[in-house]
Image 1 (cartoon, protein in one colour):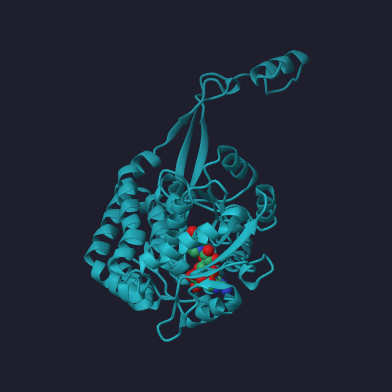
Image 2 (cartoon, rainbow, N blue to C red):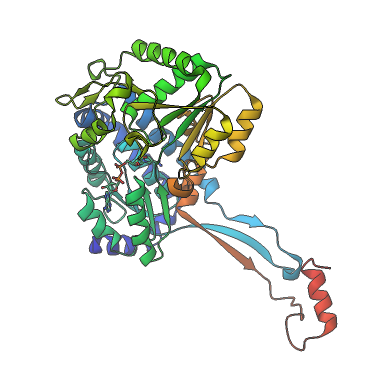
Amino acid sequence: MKELIHNQRAYFNTNATKNVAFRKAQLKKLKAVLKQNEALLYEAIFQDFKKSEFDTYSTELSFVYHDISEAINKVGKWSRVKRARTNLINFPAKTYVIPEPLGVTLVIGAWNYPYLLSLAPVIAAIAAGNTVILKPSELPSNTSRAMAKIINENFDANYLRVIEGGVAETTALLAEKLDKIFFTGSVPVGKIIYQAAAKNLTPVTLELGGKSPAIITADSNLKMAAKRIVWAKFLNAGQTCISPDYILIDAKVKSAFIDLVKQEIEQAEYATTNHNYVQIINESNLERLAKMIDPAKVIIGGEIDRVERCIAPTVMDNVSFEDAIMQEEIFGPIMPIITYESLAEAIAKVKSYPKPLSLYVFTKNKAQRAQVLNELSFGGGGVNEAIMQITNHHVPFGGVGESGIGSYHGESGFKAFSHYKSVIDKPTWFELSLKYAPRSAKKLKWVKFLMGQK
Ligand code: NAD
């Protein structure tokens, strides 16, 4: 690790990665090698957790390809030196802001969307002109191996390298001085990363998780709410960071909502054999989820197939905030339903939890929509929609409070891997004498005037 980081730093210091044409060429190459090896990528992820080609393309590779194309098209604009206004006291200087890469960067990926969550930050790091070490999650071992093979066989290790491994390898990487750490994963590991980074004052982006609520008010379009929530909840078998974790619904409409949820689940025919459902990533996560299911509260699903590593889409009714399922992020295909009597009560409850990564409100009532959006803090979210906010690359994606630090996607990703260097550039043919001795009341007056103060 030490040698790799040393060599990447030496390569970064040659300034080769700062060249915009070089960055574009690397991005084009990455796209080409991914396309050439697409069959391997599909096969690996299917072996890991039976994720189909349809789901892999629509929820991962399409975003990866889009990000690469966008970065190629826009890196020239993003990396351009930007002129800024100059204040009067600095006349006749010019001021500009130079975006510069940070240096040797480390991307640590999560397992649930293994290609997207590893490669999207790598694309942003390359676009910003850094060298990159990617440490994908070790849990989907085939996808990790596939990325290592594709990247390590095609890129110079001094520029872009995949290091496979788990805690030991990540800990060894974190012991070294890095210029940026971009982490996607759980809150507890996020805290470990932040502490390790603090030792060297390394900047971090932490894309974490948490319990994201879906609030349904009495006057929402219940049919559409059920349709969109069921899709969002059971996509990737609930193993999605921005999945609606639990439902907070006005007690008056709960039973109507449950009927509609049942219809939606039946229509979707979730089954790994249909290729429209995925496995739980491993046995330990399956057992963790199994413990959260309270059979007395299950009203839909609840079946666990340990051989197939599969949990049927499950809905639990009459759940309270004290239940096991409400003590941690679910990250699986279980939908707990909790009722509320007043929206104010629901808002107060959400506020008592750490700030969620996402929050969804299903309502036709403008005042209630405004109330939720104004009063609650969350990373990002939707009104009458869930998960789809992530597909819009025109807006930043990230958490707040315990759900994360920083953001990415589109230009935000470029910014996450850049420093913006402000420079004052002053000619030598003129110099104000105000800052020099001797000081006087008259000079102070001028200083006040030139600094814009009366
Ligand atoms: P995780 O925190 O267990 O693992 C993430 C990465 O950290 C992996 O690469 C892993 O090898 C590494 N790691 C694990 N333990 C470590 C340790 N002790 N020291 C150093 N590195 C360590 O998370 P996960 O299970 O892969 O992903 C699930 C979590 O990630 C959920 O909480 C989910 O909400 C969150 N998530 C967030 C986003 C987002 O964009 N905000 C996206 C996907 C997942």
